[in-house]
Image (cartoon, chains in turn yellow, cyan, brown, red):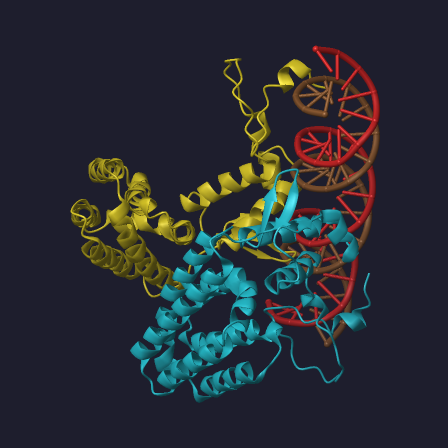
Length: 241
Length: 241
DNA sequence: AGATTGTAAATTGGATCCAATTTCATTGAC
DNA sequence: GTCAATGAAATTGGATCCAATTTACAATCT
């Protein structure tokens, strides 16, 4: 049993206790992550970052050993990832990293065009100068970096920082999932034929429209930007898959 | 070990066996659902149909007993439902049927307006006469039925039958989830102030636009239709939640 | 009485075990 | 040699058990 003197430091989520006169550097023990969510986060990151190639089998036992846990939390994680379309699970046959077909990729980009133009238009009137300067910082960093692994991440951060002020949580979740499923294919696309310079020019135009409070223009530019990324990516992917 | 004579009746998915000369009413044992998916389907239906009130606790043991299974498949089902926003899971505290706030409901309807107008526009040029006659059948049935429990289901079937020909699977999945989360609130809204008659008139107009191949009109009418349903529902829900 | 503490019951998270199914190498027949 | 049948190994699905945590409630103190 725990010592009662330590227990009084616990913070139960939802019912914030009154300000304690004890000033200690305390870790929130009560909110530490479950095993399943840790496995989930790691696998999700590995898939999104492209560290696991499409079709890679994900054996429950292997993963469980790597995280020094049992297969139960692994199954939980794989189940969640399946629902997000990042892995495909076949009964008794195990999970593999889900690839994306040409058609699916195209449709997801169409979905993004619809979502992101709408959300940025809703966001513009609510944007704070803090958000705008953060967006500009990401924009600059995107231009400057040479690490091809970072482009898609910074690209995503730039765009997302322009959406957050909309406060449209449901829409933002949908955008997140769409980005999760396509992000790993963007790096190679950006690395060819001055993709970064072109994207950067379009980013600057979108940012300027936001700074000027021109929601309709920001929406149109976002549509065109994503549309052009889609076309280049699909051409690069080829007709296959 | 199984008898080989029975094994020959098994149909392994993906590799269809040659036509057997045995003509038996056989169940596809190989494709029978997992325990988790059965629990998931049942719970999902019960929540969507409004049989389980918002906030109802979902005890793993209770559910496991009802389905004569262990808690493992139940946990799997609850996890999936959580990702779809139909239940909320708090660690060590269990799952409850997820309600929906006024703000969330409003946002989901805005999302639907965006999605469904786009999808119906994409669907119109591809619609077959079979789809149109099926849609008309649902439309008529919606008008005729007096069972308030059936309205939202028929309403959903009508609309969805106009979307399917678009072939936009990703968009359709997103629409499905949005409908899952709002369907149970629609019945009460339709039952007040001639809601059914009004909805039926709007359905007829949408259907006519589809039959005439007028995609842009169908999209505009769909936007207006969902928008009016949203306004009436939100007014009925009140400012609370 | 009201707040606080300690304790037991209820509940969930995770580990381990067994069963069901697939996979793959091997065997045998033609 | 090719192809179906066979059986062991690998793998996943599900059941049961134990641990961690919350919750309800009685006991204690002020």
